[in-house]
Image 1 (cartoon, rainbow, N blue to C red):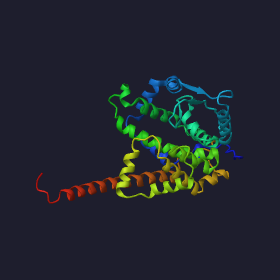
Image 2: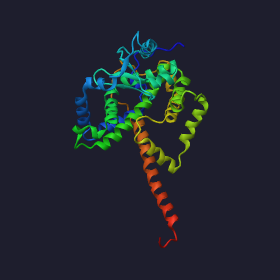
Image 3: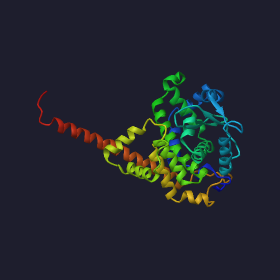
Image 4: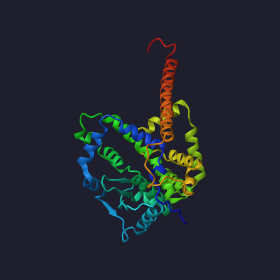
Length: 322
């Protein structure tokens, strides 16, 4: 398949408004800069590399040569000159990540490689390259350290307000995935391949019916009862990745909006375009996204409390004693 090279494409071309809004909210937390500075200083670039690559294998022409070729092709499609190191880790968990402070790199777990075919692997590499191009690696590295070591394992952060930071960090981490799913699609330039990657990550290699999976994603989104909303908030709060069905549905919305087709037609922001302050429309879009989400969550919680109170009263109505 011939892919359209996206000459000088800027990460601004694919970034999700919720990604930008969540990152702004994260940066606004009191003590945020101090937390980032302390974690980065404690681990450092070498510490991060030791932490994540001690048992990994560096990809190159003689080591996983097909992956090395895939990385080259993705870099050419995305027109990105800075070639990151790519490692494979012998780990059954289906995952990949981009980490590092000064010179970030990509790690792909062997469980992911065994699950996905070549083009699906291309989608993942483009997704992770999207994180690097968007400058996500510092904050994502902090998030991975927090999730791996735990806040209690970082005593030098004592006396800082860590819980709001953790929640905001995970919220941004999830939303950054939505941005880079778009980058993955732009790198592979095949909608079915991108959606099939989500299908396999949700159900394994034997999951084959993509239309049924997309219908399942639609069903998840239309379950908007009060209790459904509460469960979704509770089930998501401590996750680092959005659910696979949510990612599939969000990517389909991006495609249906026409934004993907416009980029392939050459209508996109380029890296050499003047960097201007965020457009009012962009800010409004991000603000609207979170305002609607906040209203929804607040309304959901309030309705749930009322529902629980009524259920409790109904259950014990007429009872005068034990």
